Image (cartoon, rainbow, N blue to C red):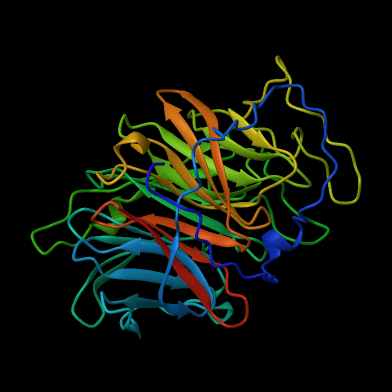
Length: 382
């Protein structure tokens, strides 16, 4: 990018977040059967300038912007805060009780969709809700779905993507429960009821809201779209309607996938990484019956948060995918064109990046994982 110098305020950090604790930076590179080219940055192009912004967030998990420019931040310990234009941070009222706010998506009309972990006293299930934002808090909160029949006592994932017309919603579920008797991401054919979100992408078809803006919840119909995912922390819908997903692999093998309904993406049968105990997992290979990733990272970068850029500040990046990297301590950019993807840039941040979001003015914002003193916010703009 032109006109940018390298100004990065760096902070060595660590976290006990479970999905990243298993993602050490130094890893042996596994020989993969399917090529995934590494980025080849131009030596003439300086790294962009991510400028630290006022205000730190305690335990940030997800970022999203309201149309008026205020920022919503979902928290690791549950609940949300709102950050005003002056950098002031205040708790948001009216948010359902939560042990972790997993992901937040805001639509052009200001409607908010969010996935969260219900308190253990309520079952500890993965839940999905819809609301609007008033001056001081959430209004018209509706819980659209929660996993009553499928308690998720391991890593929940919970990334959310919503179609522009808000009639189709996608939710991701992580690979399995923890413990010896763990249902894996693979399921017998036809095992769709009750809806089990382990290792799956789930689709919910929503009815049109009534005159009061509420949905007829009895008409919400969930279905499983794909299976065989490990830890899918990023979902986004491209301008052409295609659904994209990224997920953390085991020791290596982080993936970027184009989601094709009915496909099995292979976990835990195949992966371009290996297990943490040294167990070899077969690579993806042609004819194995599984859908391979379009891109993978080995060593891991631990992708978190996902943005398909559509703003006007950086027209050269429209349609590009941006993701934070936890163990990789970076921002990763990939180019996406139709059903194809390629690695483009990996900009070092020297700190764990938890989420990426686009502001109404087209600026790109990042939040770092909490280092014990709160997570800093970074802005890239012109």
